[in-house]
Image (tube, rainbow, N blue to C red; front, side):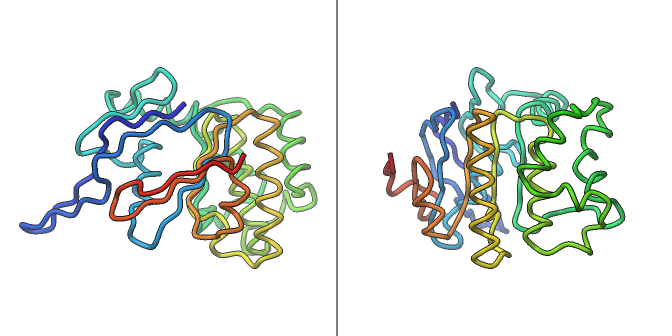
Length: 224
């Protein structure tokens, strides 16, 4: 479970304060898919980055299960992220000089963690990448590159998967394929998934939906 307690994120520009997230208290249940929606500038991505420990809160606390990530040292937070959180972004962030296989395994190799070969084989099969392992990112379609990014996020079997507009650069067919694969893998791994999206069709497939405006949750509803 992800618990937000009076969380605020304030950016200061000269003498002005911009409240990107404004005093949010909320609980996101474990092992479900939660969609975060709202207009551009509503605070969706900021909220995701705070939950993932990629940005610091100005006020408040964030807990992931029993761990209060907002009280961890930088070293502790880095380790916690590596072991528990997977990230997928809109712009793939693949290393262009590395093959698909190398991109997927990169983080584990940096941390000197041995890759589970059986799980790796299953993962690339579900994501339909088995015939692309020796290709470079520049030789792939947008949908294929996003699937590589998803495989990279999932290779460590994270409990929490955070996705920021993961289909924003994809066509409709590729978008639907990526979401189908994500939902399939979520069931296998019993993951908690939080996905920022402006796509109403994706939001409808989530278990729960929260809508942000001006850094505040203005609506929430369940699809189950």
